[in-house]
Image (cartoon, rainbow, N blue to C red; front, top):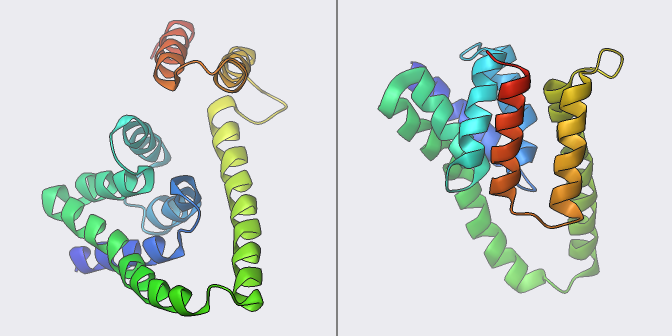
Length: 179
């Protein structure tokens, strides 16, 4: 029963994820932490961290690690298959349809609307991750905010390698906030 529940849950998450890995986070959190309570918020944060530094697509890594944490290797395989199944079917169908109707103004309008919706979902995810990492604005941790701002500037202004920024930020965070 758990395996079927994992498969169906990640089928739903996979089919609802449009626009990249981070757009899956709100769905994963609401399903896995709040709904099914398979993971605690701290465990999900660990899954997100591991998924971020692991090779491969972020949301697929999250799905795999949630399955592994919940039901071991069979769970990892089942959540990965569930996450990929419906999107693969939809992509095959869409490829056939888009090859026939890609020049239609109505199809172009629908795709533009979908892209605008994804920007909203991604902004929601950014705000959610920011408040989880730094805290709510009134009681914000000044050190975490400083690390965030410096990392942001290093990444986007000076184009520093993200691995270096992540490693240095992690070390500074561990020094300032030892567990």
